[in-house]
Image (tube, rainbow over all chains, first blue to last red; front, side, top):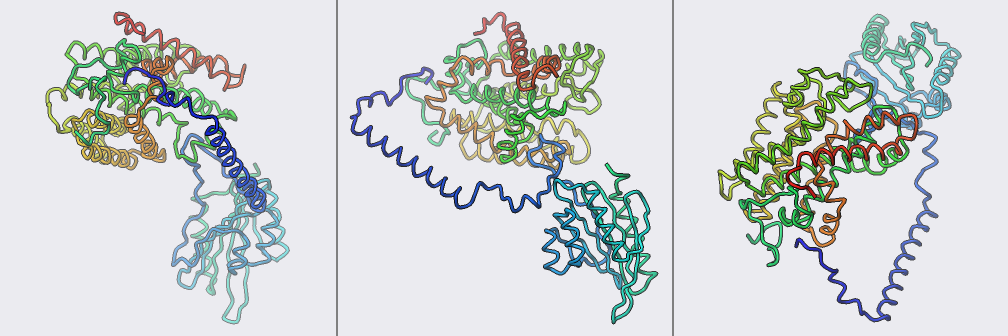
Length: 229
Length: 375
């Protein structure tokens, strides 16, 4: 075992030329078939880069490339109190299809670069609370997304108060047959994510209280950026 | 032993019994003799491969991360191999685990006399002594060496503690040679072989004691004690698995016992991930799941081609200098990289860094074996 001997196949070196030619033809045929399959697949399905989804691509920073996997940052959401109504991460269009978001606003946000939405909503007694994290796709400046969102909210008559460089709060009333809803909300920019939180209910004081505590918790855990980067 | 991992030895090969005091690898034998002594090409192959992986993982991988460089080659290998396979640290840990398996395999083979064992232990400790001394000196020179934390300066007390491997098992001392624990575990395995020769028998006593000790330390770590020791010992199951594979191959341990030890050892590695925060998120059990079958496969199927590769001078050289090269990469290789930083691309700089590491390793190896006429 310790010594290295000649190849055991060396005894069969005198195989006939005809057999060699046959096996060579077989190898070529196999290689040809494999190549044809690969070219056919490429022609049928492309190279797998999926250009349609490239428009929605979000690249997360890789904090430690020596890890065996890419660490994706946690979703910056505190869980609202009450029973959870929705907890969903999907493309913006899915939120329109599922009627979970105002179509006009979501269309605006998509045009402004939002490619992924995470929503957590909960019902706490008479109050409904929700947080949306709107992630901006690669190649779009999140500041421009924020500007377009602000434009949209001002044209739609949100009375906005700026509370920090990248943080706005607002409240308004929605009149419905069942009563008037007091809507309290805020939105801010954190990294490449526009974060929007909201609380509403028919009782203005209760809605405001619920909003204030959600606002405090959310901003303590995931504060806004201090200014444009 | 009809169910041994390895087919019965052909007549030309004298089977090496576990308790025959055979010479082991690196005792100044040439490649073919050494391979016969340790029974096949698995150990030299694992050692050589492990050494190359660790050189790559530290000189290219670790250095790049510490200096915010991302050579295209490294990025591509991470993208195509490390991430899809789930092997972190640019294969450093895979290399370490292969070295540990080889160390266990070797340590189960021989029960040397006291004097021979003492020499062997001294030769294993020599690279720790040399690398630590060199590192302690270099911390006072404006260069870069791999210490933990980086940029540590070693006083005399730190140096002494590092020589005693205290820094490896407590969090309070700066570690001058971060991979010294790999060789330390090999020393532990060798000491285990003493016990092995006392409790002769067909029961996996030493292996079980090894795993029980690891389990005990992990249990302590789960309750807030010995955390750093647990991090180091969590890889010891690989040594035990190497021992068990050897004994099964030699016919002194049934294969089901090896399988049990393997599963238990692997479970300990998985438990350690939960117990030690430092190990979380590195997927070492997965890395072990590559290393163990790879090594077992090399033992079982080590045939003619494997032997030819193992007998090649470069493989033999790497395998016999493995401990030196691995410990010196951060001490001799890093200063070379620091010297060349900014003057050439990092991938190019790695070549002289490897050369310096290997030269110092060769010098150390010759010094440690000067009476054994190393080949």
